[in-house]
Length: 336
Ligand code: F6R
Image 1 (tube, rainbow, N blue to C red):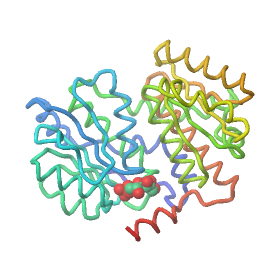
Image 2 (image 1 turned 90 degrees about the horizontal axis):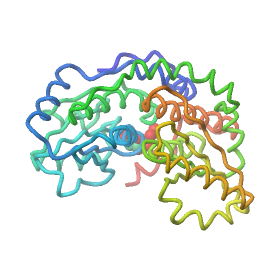
Image 3 (image 1 turned 180 degrees about the vertical axis):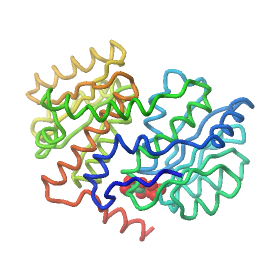
Image 4 (image 1 turned 135 degrees about the horizontal axis):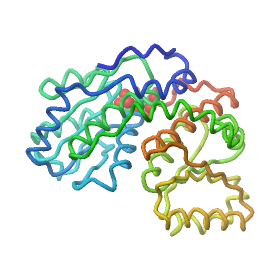
């Protein structure tokens, strides 16, 4: 179980500022790692990550981090049920912070019906009740799922790495690096507050590639849920094959692309970012580029998440909306 977080869970700002600290508060038990090791040894066909919204994003980020080394498929499913190929030879990691998300519950049911192995990560709810015969990691309760990402990620990443038989990432080192990042953001001028001001009056489109494509998606979701304003994401190189033709209208519609840089991108992707930004500029469209911080791919990835999570709270404050509550998501959940 996660340690108590000792962060004011009624304040999204406090939760997001606690991101680096939260990365150090949970880790899978020896028993959980041992079962993952045993499954890996037995031989598995793939890893299926199951979850919705804030509970799914850690899976996306982890999937991005292992993309170059995974020798079996790692898929993320956000749906009522999992594809047929997820059979008894696959291992699933099922995450629902509340434990009551219907899509996730149905998928878990299906996995168990097919006799697939699973690990469950939840703070309680129906999922915990249903998970009587699989390893369960219990999260501390009482925080918004999207703010629990560092807690969830520090369970999901070591689990996936064990299942894939690859070395474990150093989350503690990454956490300490994240704590030092606000200083370098201030030096480079793009603090979360500055990013929020740049984006407050435009339609942001976060652009990532490779391991940062899920980070662009996370930023879009955080701006939607925390700042309650439209935002989109896109991915390179794919966007160069379609979206680029619409750039001419970006200025008129006040769209602002925000590029997430990486020291680890393929040189061809780096070139695409540079040339895409110059094409945008030729169309009279401003864009932002967030430079890479961090000495590892993990720290870089989480550093982008941390800065943009903070920017989404800053944007909420600029807009005078509550970054914590999600009344429309709650309303819809009651209706369906
Ligand atoms: C709310 C949030 C949502 C939920 C989603 C699924 O903070 O992030 O996107 O994560 O509605 O609910 P859970 O996470 O409880 O399975």
